[in-house]
Image (tube, rainbow, N blue to C red; front, side):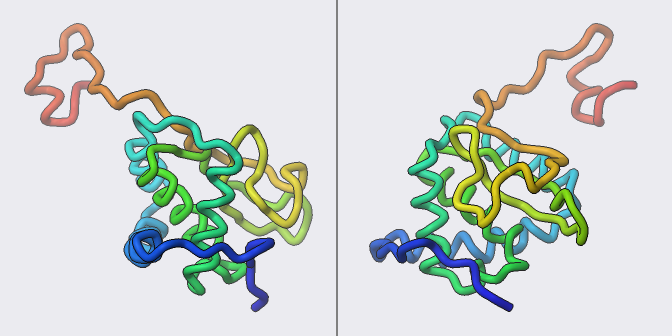
Length: 161
């Protein structure tokens, strides 16, 4: 298995290395969630964050790759992309998280981050992928108002149909 490495290794400080040491196992656990549940969880985490710029997202990706061998494998894209999200979120930003497939055979699933409308440091350009869904930075999370005929008790029990 060949490794995915940054163009140039970066030297994160001790606090960032410690944070990455905590983030990567969490990213691995999140990556085991069913896709719909993971998408909802990440959307909640993205709420209130400002969109990450390309340089911010690339720096976070480079720090993750430099500090975590677990995120360097070619098949580690899910854990790597989630770890980048979490590191950016710890800094108040959120790149767009994308999940899709390589568009030509052999088809393979892939997860990546985008910032400023482009993929962050992926080996091929976005035309090679078909995106299934994304989780962009979002507005501050608010509970929606009750709909007509719904009570607060209905909402606590899961709402009405």
